[in-house]
Length: 129
Image (cartoon, rainbow, N blue to C red; front, side, top):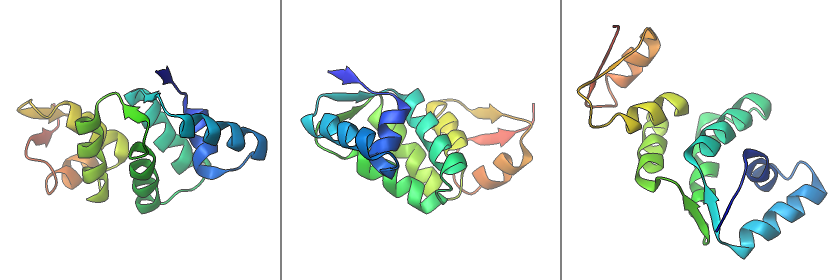
């Protein structure tokens, strides 16, 4: 199994560099690809901030990529839960943090917006420390 970096996924999904896109697609098609959770997080950030992907498009792109034969995520249930929550309005990074903390009783943050959005999405309490 070979792990891939953010830039390989970005090339695969955007096709912005024809030569690198062809290499990325060949690599992914060959299978045996491992995607660390940190790479998934960075990919979302690059696609959102650098390429202007809207939240719905981001979730769809990441789900489609993760569902490809031969692609293995570091923690598939964690990623699926974070993507579900991102569909419900949470920022993907926040959704990933909350998914990782799913067995905790509370998530403490100074981010008021996170607390407001999370209130309708997650079971745990999100509150200021």
